[in-house]
Image 1 (cartoon, one colour):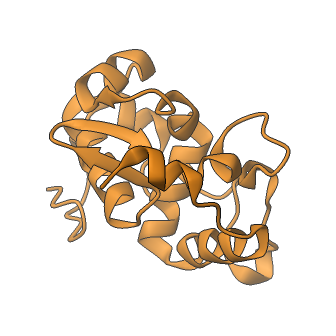
Image 2 (tube, rainbow, N blue to C red):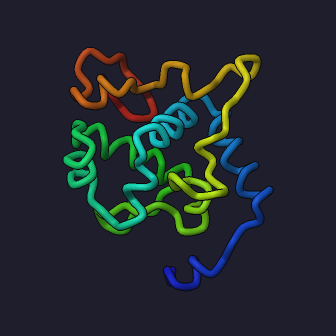
Image 3 (cartoon, rainbow, N blue to C red):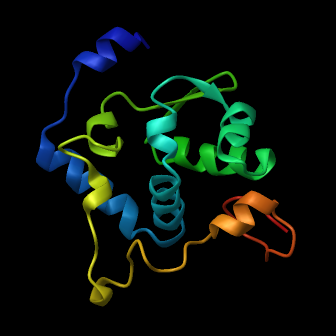
Length: 143
């Protein structure tokens, strides 16, 4: 895949927002996606980084951070080449802090059952302390 060509492709605003909304409505994937938004992961990964480097920057557990990043790759909002992650160039305008088209400002009504103020699958404290005392999660393989 040629990154230059990928960066030239721009989805319509409506298509990208619909795609991102569908991710957010998928419970576990959505919670991971919303946690990534809250932690600023997409903005921090506008420059390629390893999970270890990102975890150091965030002050989070590197193993759990790598698992979360791999889920975000499966959701196609991050790209991974070898052990390096980067925010999808196609979706970056909708994921970066400060962007006029940022998805960060989206809030869902409580009727829809999800929102930035709701508990995320991985509360920031758990992410920062590693994965001890967490129940098994089939997506991330946590004990």
